[in-house]
Amino acid sequence: MTQSLAAAAESAVPASVPLREVLPWAVFAGVIMLSLLYLVGMDQGATSVFSGNMIHEFVHDGRHLLGFPCH
Amino acid sequence: MMSRLLIRGMIAGLLAGLATLLFALVFGEPGVNGGIAFEEQAAAASGDAPEMELVSRGVQSTAGLATAVVVYGVAIGGIFALVYTLAQGRLGRLTPRAMAAVLALIGFLVVFVVPFVKYPANPPGSNDGDTISQRTGLYLVLVLASVLVALAGIALRQQLTSRLGTWNATLVGVAVYVAVIGVIEYLMPAIIETPDTFPAPLLYGFRLASLGGQLMLWTTLGLTFGALVDRTRACDQWVDARLPAIS
Image 1: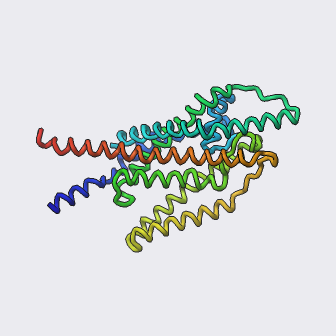
Image 2: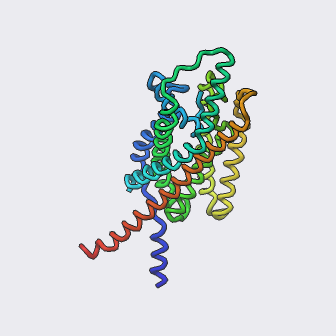
């Protein structure tokens, strides 16, 4: 009884995922996610990957409200 | 394992973005509109021609706002899943829901609140457009510094846990974070460019709405992600428990 309770408590806390398994995902997904954040928060402000002002104007309200520096 | 967590993070982020969108539509938009009205008044008073509209206000305040907030939510959700995966089983023995809640609270404070203390969100018309490069750079440096110092604080906590116990080691880690980021914020240049005539209630209301929106985002993200991961785990365990019987 005590053993099965201990086993249940043990299974409630997941074991760690090996770093080797996380690393490729961290790099792959990390780059994509950070690029998305850059596009929404900063492009066509201080720096521009895409020329023009279209992205900046489109996401204008979101930038202000999410706390990014804007014009 | 990792891909399943990543997808759950992005789903939780999507839901968090939608919740934040509702909040922003009700409480955030009045501040944006007020700022734009002030901007136009100031431009008219100084005799400048009104700015040409690339995107209409109607699109900016609906589809534009929705795109920005939802993409932001999904991206933060994805990164959150990566951080969660690294934290699980390494940063103390917490259940998935508790771990997700704790990480969301840390993320809200470290990524948003602490940089906000020095460089708060500003409505349209309350900043000088020519200083955008400088302001973006400073904000980025502060967010990055906050994350790095927080990671150092966590590493220190891990080091000290065996000697001081979990509680005291956590207190030392938090204290070191607060002290170091406090000094960094004190040393970074202040940005004081809000026009004297800018209405104070408008600025206050806008910043409160910005803070509220981010609180909504991180709360929804942490609680939804925790629930999604917990459900999958229960499901996995159910299958694992029956697999040997089948084979």
